[in-house]
Length: 389
Image (cartoon, rainbow, N blue to C red; front, side, top):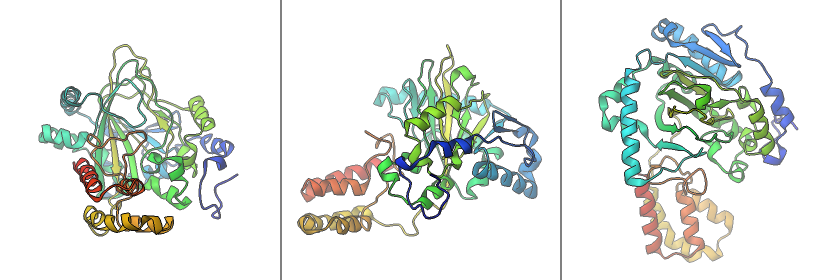
């Protein structure tokens, strides 16, 4: 079964065809139309930032470079490496010291952090962007004064993008993750993913860009990211990535590249990928994971949905037994926030899934269990408090 027909409105796991997937990922990345590439290794285009200074500083050449990178993310391998993204890695070392101190402090205060797609023996700093800035504004400013990172982010998302970041440290003995796709639809359950029409599956990958900055030299033994070039081209991939046959194929065909401190990796969030197992003896693999969002992922008006929930709840509680499910869902959609993000993942971690409970889900749970207004408002206030950065 193919997913190229516009008549197919929704993607379900049972409809995913591994043979169609194999045809897409069996392509080879050509260098013939890549003007600025230094080499191609294991189907991944490699760029050297030290050779791209003219492109970063000349607007016309910068547009040409960004066009090339956007084409890779959208139509070709879906992933690229920027070697020497940091020509001077001293700021990486300064940030690493700060991040290690934050990890130590947070472990003392909170214990082990929860994690998406957790690989076991790892440390995670949520919102490393803000925490680095709070600890050392100068280091933060120097860290992100990076033309290569700015150019690759704009190549996919355009200007005014929103930067977020999370530190991940996988220690020796840390297990590999399972193959997955990333935010947005990558964090949805199969049931929820299947409710979104196919054009939303097409849209999700252009709302974010995934990146990572190597804070140490990362040999293959240390477990750099496992990647399957061209896999972002499979339209039904957000339905397929949890299927065992797709994951098995990924494990048989993924590629990895070693990275040096200061190198950066960027890829479409729709690319099948996972962190590798750290089989080294002495390399705590630290990566600053950059999750960059489009400026357009926002509503036009700001709405006080907490207030609306509190005002509406007594009426819904009184009438829930007489309301149809579609009526209730429609009212909740116009009242409460239906999405779990953005949130403060230190205070509001994903428990039992990849995303915390949404405002709508909390309100529906309260109604189904006939909570009193006082109990619901207390739970709503607590949820709101946890979402504050």
